Length: 534
Image 1 (tube, rainbow, N blue to C red):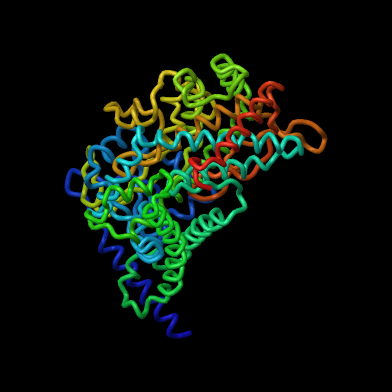
Image 2: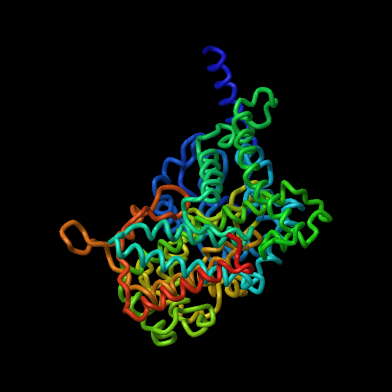
């Protein structure tokens, strides 16, 4: 007991001294970014839960374009204006594309190989170059047949639920859809039902990583300098290594299976098949890193897309006027004789605007995607030290009344003057031309944005063509209020709706017949030798 107390005391002194030594004073004529006062060691962490976006929006209104808080060990600066984002994350991306030290979650549990957590190193840049080449708009279009197939199953599954008066299984159908699309795109493996081995394995990895990476799970993650103590004294290392090997075994299984299919000339068209063809070994990238890269694609593309889709359904039920306008457009363009497809996209501007509005009003993260400075930066009269976390304050930007009329309301029409995909506006030289910041910015921007936009378009097009989304009925037979408040979402840094209920009412008998016929046609195609691997 005495030893433990002494050790803790030494650690505490070390933390305070090390922290003081790391603070840099700004040069003369410059100042630090302002922000709210925090507590010793904790910083401002106690002021964030349970819905961090509320505090972040309040501080943005108080401090302006940027503010600084301390979250545990790290200083965080939140960027509250598109021009600041453009300048710091785009124009100065060479020194703002790092990742904060993560000695347990990244270095041990991920073996330094998890793409989203890797530092801004030559190896990461090589991987990023390959990923971007394989996920361009043209390359992403190769996965549209899979997205069309899965969207057909989605509306068929929802239709079958309605016969049982099931008002809540749609939530898991959306998760199945997004998981199947990303698994098919990455490895050519469909997920025809939620209860299957692939889903269990993928979510074992994701849930276990979330558990181990959660704040407070490891003291060394909260206080990175502790990782500098001798390895034999790192009491957390054994537990973290076991987690790493469990995850690697799962990603390795998928990787080696696909490699064998390539050798046998039976591999389906997918991201990993194309990746192998890039001859990644010549870039000094090993197979374990490659397996983790593919796994990172699956992690990034499954829950985020389903969360956005479930948010879209929630808001369309809560704002029937927007839903009616989208449905009227689909009916005018498509009619009753077939369901919508990707060829209709250019003729459905309001639906495309609906996708953008979903990503504005509920971006996939509550605190943005953190970058990390690898050199000192000067912006106007502000000094931003090296080793500072920079994050886009998406909610502050998306709910800025100077840019958005009634930002708390779901109004897709605000985007009718933004007819292009998100990628076009990310590259636009005018920072205020951005449609939204849901896909990040700079060199850490989401590489799968084209795949995500395509998924949201095709699923919403088919759902709104087939069904009217209505509030659930309560025990008294009356429609319940659809809750779109922060309380309707899970706590934490990601924007995940809590499970909820709505009704899907079939539009008419003709569309019901077409829905069934198209799914029967899809099932027949799946049985053919050239179909997507199941």
